Image (cartoon, rainbow, N blue to C red; front, side, top):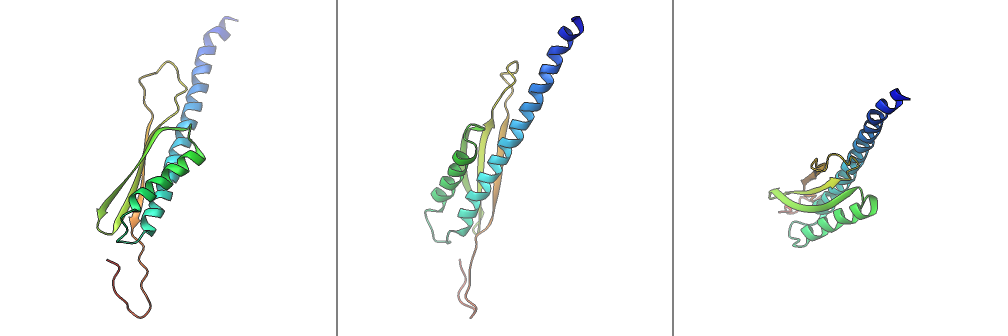
Length: 130
């Protein structure tokens, strides 16, 4: 009985740590999926589109709400351009915390996805996209 009383806190802490790592991993996957989908929308928008940022952040937020609104808390999506023809979406949030003894420990997650803007040119050598 004494051994069980001594080992139970260690076993409980180990189980909570495993659950915490699983929740962090799943929240990271949600953030990466949202960033990927937002970047897909951003890359597909035309060069002269003024609304690509709102559409991309809207899609990323939609994916977060559909896949894991409780897993990725306080999630925000932001857009950026690194080159004139490269667009990126960054999703930032925090994972659910199940370890009650570590309230100051933050499980912040950041995922970025993006790439060059898609440009479709006609076969006859038409004009450039930019």
